[in-house]
Image (cartoon, rainbow, N blue to C red; front, side, top):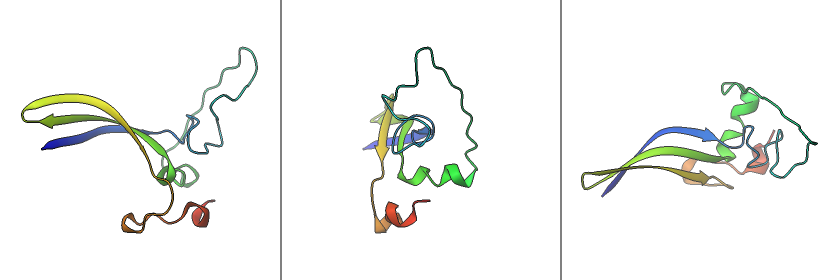
Length: 94
């Protein structure tokens, strides 16, 4: 048996260019020497509404037979999934 404990996560739809992020898109040209800094409040409803339909990176610890390993895994929720209570994105998008 493998036990996985999620230690922290980062929603990549908030400032990282994944999943329809309105603030950034991979490969988007912003001009030579362009830089930017952004702050996001993860309790802001405009931000949290993007999270259920996001790509998320997780840092985790895995244990199997006494051996311990560390790693990162990425997952995404796409579309409706009734058992989890995920409504269709197009029906709930802001």
